[in-house]
Image 1 (tube, one colour):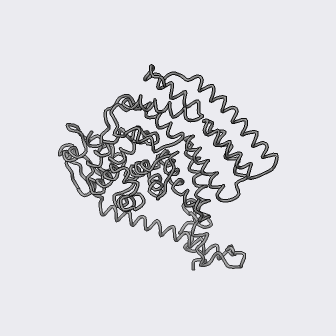
Image 2 (tube, rainbow, N blue to C red; image 1 turned 135 degrees about the horizontal axis):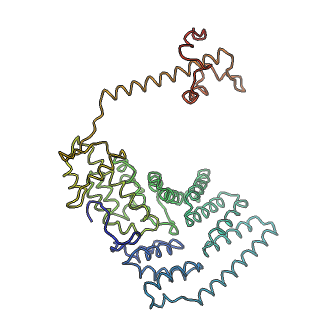
Image 3 (cartoon, one colour; image 1 turned 120 degrees about the vertical axis):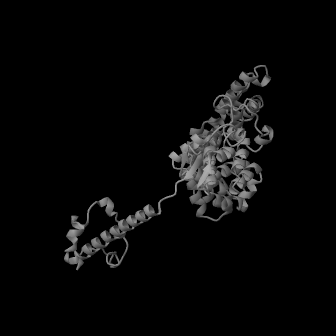
Length: 466
């Protein structure tokens, strides 16, 4: 599919074209809940990989304790391949696992109660952590979160505080509670900044990927790009994402939100992020093409991997918006060197054969992305060149407004000093006079009046000005 336009697929949320990814190789990068969720997501959305992904999801679910995961995967697989052995509901496994979970949960709670009775802080902390891990493995994320929160009162040393906030960050990510994820990641960052231990350094990549994922989920692509670009080396968080994901998420968010110069400096010239880009060469080629002004090539590369991105559990809902932003940036950047471009040349670079991007250009002009006008008679896109006279007038008006604001501040200062209302600090130093502290920060526009409610004309005769 050329020119970066949306592919023609089936119903919304369903990918009918084959992706480039190899499912077995792809899924080996993950562990735990995210491994199952990614398999299930691919199985529910890819018509090509559906049977393979759902079969693998059933097998993955039976490796753990989460009965709800198994039921969801088995039900989906039974609709795709009802005659397969894995598609038959394993009532024996479900009953056995539910019983095991009940027994194990009771045992852990009893142990924790004993630790509390003995008032052994470290044992209580470990007991709460064990309960949190257990509930997390069974899919009871709310009880897991509560158990991890109880660790806080017994977490004294930095190592334990780091572990606590790492658990809470992971749980909020699994809950898709992105505000909570940002909050706990920030707390984790604050703790690590206070210490230079190896544990603190090792957790930095985890903080960055958690922040990046949360920002991307909130469509704060610039903040997400900054976080992913700052992941650094040593990233090892298969329970959340892989190094390939760092390259894809970071690269696409950067393309959508960062200008060409910054893409060169912060992405292509970054020694640390370059190692991630090597895992996903198509992202590197797309960014390189954009930086070199080969915008149609960049869009074509990305379009070739659209189906892969649509099958990513975190990226899928952002593909259309990110691609739209990149496409709009490409058109705007293409137009910058020219005062006039024919619609024919724009169509050749960005539109499908036989189609026009005139409506798209009109939308970009309306939302302010493109400062231009369309001449439908001549078939050209013309740059709007600002009037030098109008710019000078506006600059003069802005200068006059700033001068008036400064004058208001100085008049008020003189009246305050004259009235003996200046403040003094505890050490006796005047906060009025030549100090530029509080008075300079007053917003007189918000106050809406001059000192003493006077006008400038009234103040001209004020003896304090003489």
